[in-house]
Image 1 (tube, rainbow, N blue to C red):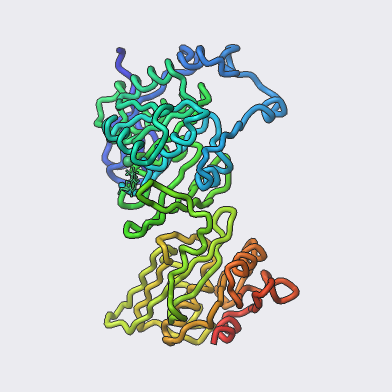
Image 2: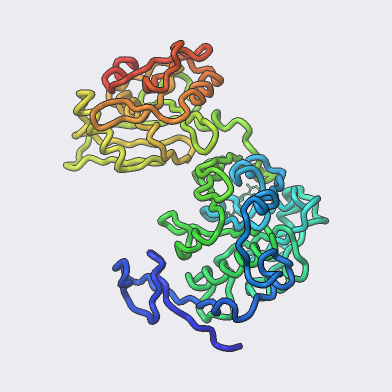
Length: 461
Ligand code: TYD
Ligand code: MG
């Protein structure tokens, strides 16, 4: 095989360099350059896949300018995977020809979920599970333990991308799972499997395969310590959707979140519980993020967050404790760190409550990550409750963004959040004025509208 032309690409900013150097001259970061294969010039030779597939543009020669109305009706054929929570995160089912990256810590359930999906799909879609980490016997044993129908399941233990695609071309499955992309390598490169260049090049080949043959491809990706998916940033740009498993290692609950989705809402959540029969869907996820207290406890506030397209009740816990350090600790789990410092400053200036000599710890129960500003008010109420060692009024929920001048700002979809709280039997909601209904209540739920932080504090005495 002719030696492929290569270049060096920065894994931070994606800049290309013709030779290796220690520092990227574009973004100035050190030790991020990695070798990649340059694609042959377009038009040199159509790929085998395009010729065989009858893929619209290529089959007739060069791609043509097309009125979108003729395209819109034919694309985005979706298939239900049979796992409702997965369909929800995918944006309503599996899209033909899409490439989905599934990331998460080791042992969190990536392989289990995808194998279960193939099991339920098996009856009406042909699929291949490519395993680079486990042996065929291990995969078969797992499928059996999960109680999946074995007849339609097909697996391939192979890590060379050229040989995987050769077999996939011959068999033409509708769904292809690669577990994991870090074990896959291409003959074009000498770098070790798992290196940035190998991951990027293999993923590029798989993406091309997916688009040319309308196969849905799932890539399993490992996660680095920093929380990113190992491999170049470009991997995230190459795929259509990035799904991420979250959850505490001690807990049996697993949250699958869409970080990027070209075919659906981002931040959409799917909730699962790991059982001895694999991952089970959790139809009513609100209940699991509320810790089971016997009675009201200081430092605990319940918020209604809206991740993706559904509202979710989540408990925020705070612990405020006299600090022995000159620089008190601010520790946040499941929320943004800098936001807490800002909120504490607002609490001081506009609520008259000082916490500068206190350690403040804030945690979101259930290992879920809340990224929206609606968490501001409940976080402050939890902090205040812990500081005063006095529980918030019973059956109370809160949400709202806190501004720097102490105002409580409305957040999107207030009505829906209030309905969710009412459904779960809450009696009082402290919410921004802009989110409160005119009647002042939703069913049994009394809505207390606040405009300023001080009003919210008064409402929770
Ligand atoms: P796995 O899917 O192998 O994780 P990943 O592919 O993300 O590394 O999940 C393995 C974990 O799940 C392991 O700790 C055992 C647990 N598990 C169950 O509890 N029940 C089951 O039925 C299965 C298959 C796994
Ligand atoms: Mg695995």
